[in-house]
Amino acid sequence: MLRLYALYRLKRFRLLTELWRLLDDDVLIFISFKWKPIYKTLWHWHNVRVKAEGFILIHEALMKAIGKALKTCGIEMGLLLACDASPTRAMPRDTEGRYDGYYMKLCYLVHKLVCRVRNLTLTWAVTPGKG
Image (cartoon, rainbow, N blue to C red; front, side, top):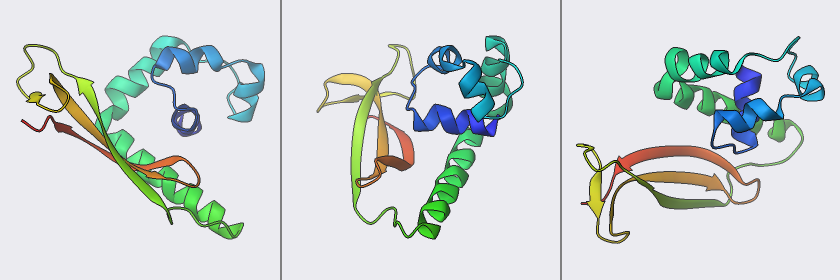
């Protein structure tokens, strides 16, 4: 499942259904799966077993492994960085989301730190709007 998550992050899918539709025989062999998992199995692993906190740890470990592999090839990662905050709309009755005057909506901000050379998200944080 960790290889499946790595594929999910590197392809930058937003939804699990996009990942599930991609899983044909060639991709399954590439990530060492014998058969295509049922969508409900993916959903349960993503939303119940691992949750958001686990994905942060998995993502950090994945980026360290990619950095180590690139370093053995003589390629540096993270020399040029870009930081950005993108709004994600909060629901109207959400108590944690805040109104952001710049974006003029109730939202959360997703802050990303991206390697400009390799175009990989190194880390991210989700915060309420600026208020």
